[in-house]
Image (cartoon, rainbow, N blue to C red; front, side, top):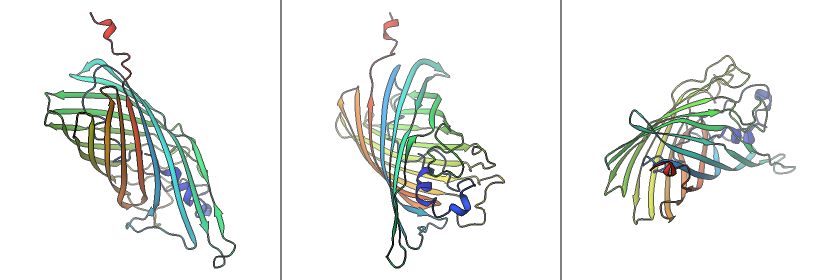
Amino acid sequence: MKKTFLFIAILFFAFLNTTAQNVSAYHYGSYQPGLMNVRDLATVPSQGMILIDYNYWLKSDGYYDQNGDRFSLDRVDSQVDGYINVPVVYYASDWKIFGARYSVALAPLYMSAGAKINIHLNDGEDDITVTPNISGFGDLIFSPLTLGWSFNDHMDFSFLYTAYAPTGRYKTGADDNIGKGYWTHQFQTPFYYYLMEKATALFVMPTFETNGHVKGSDVRPGNRFSIDYGISQYVTKWLELEVLNGHTWQVGDDKGDDVWWNGTRFEGRDHTNTVSFGVGAWPWAGRLNVRAKYVMDYGVKQRLKTNFLSFSVIFIPNILTGTKNKK
């Protein structure tokens, strides 16, 4: 989802002289493939509210440059851990637009990250250990337009527009940034095809992101294109297994007079691949769903390589269903 704060925690001390008054070179858009569950956007929901809570524990394996090589600093070892919580309030209305059900969602983010950095001096003597930690609320996610179409019992298709508002703490040159400092506009078109009376779901979803200017600077991070695809299989009526793969490419260059990293080893377009394995269950049929999954990055360029452990809860409280108003 948002990794800039992790880069700053690890690397701010190494690049202090060149970046203290400049915009960070580490911008990766807002969408991270592989983190969602396969059926999160599946069947067009009936009218009512849905509450979702996503939890991600992450560990960084390091930064990889434009050649896919792990970046390292002589005499420096680092380890980074983080946690992200994303509570989502989702409402499916009874309105129809072009035959599609209209829905809306709102999601604040809370993030924390800690780094342990060992700087080895004088052949192991007088080592320095730095343990920066940051936490706080990040950028706000708002999906004002979700349209869902259901075609018989075999296909679902949706269109989603999502905005990431730069509400998280951000200041150029700061070492405790939580937000990205710029708007992101995201467009997604998830498609599902079902087999065996929906016990099997085949999923594919393209995502396109376009970014605004970083606050107080002439830097506009490049646009990105992602694609997720996977399969979900119910092995019983309450137990589900899933595999999801995803890829993200930066498809536009970082632009602006303040893009200082052109001509350095940090110049270039970022790319990552992600695979995840998950299991879901319905301890309360039709009302409560719990899911756990493990997510791994691979083939990373110009990004952190990160592993995630995810746990999410979906609760359907049966409110705002409109049933009281129906005769």
